[in-house]
Length: 249
Image (cartoon, rainbow, N blue to C red; front, top):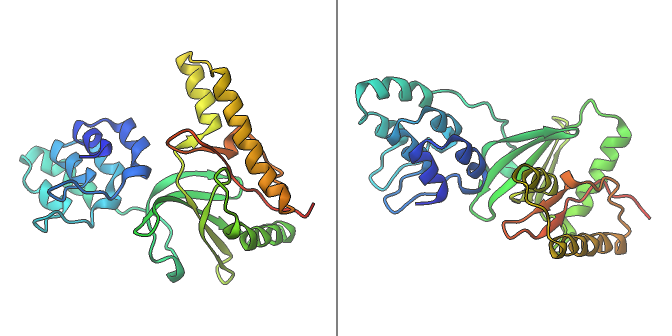
């Protein structure tokens, strides 16, 4: 069982919310998903967070609703309507049909970010930018960025797996590698726990950021929005810069 499955089976809602983007749509030895474990335990909130696994089947061909049918009547009456609830996520264009959206992560100034999964890339983040009503200069900058970022490859620059522009619908899609959190998240978390950064951690992070920035500058690119919320950490706390709108030096 994965950590997400354990949390779902125990009704640990906040842990499920945290792990869902990273471990969604995985299956254990008998083919059960985290949703099935949440259903089996009768944990309603966790079921609501994992609805995007409801199309999956276990080793015996059963769905999460089949699991719900085996619950006592009281729990079954509460869980079954949840499993039939419609989830509102955007449709992806055919060019991105290999990606399955697994949840909504948040909305920023220039788009909404979803967690996604594909066989080729595993868990990743997919940003949807609706630019139809944006200023022309911003749209032009976005398109320049989309023409540049797929070629960037550096251990401390966030990698983009795919980009796609759909001018007919005024929407751009950017598929990025998955990171576990930002420097801002780390600072806030440590503040709440009263856990200061060690000197070696600070210097390592600065070195990694500088390495990524130097790589961009060598290619005539300027970040223009460097801040803790745009510094991402991998699971092993490797700092990665989120590329911003490129600009000729």
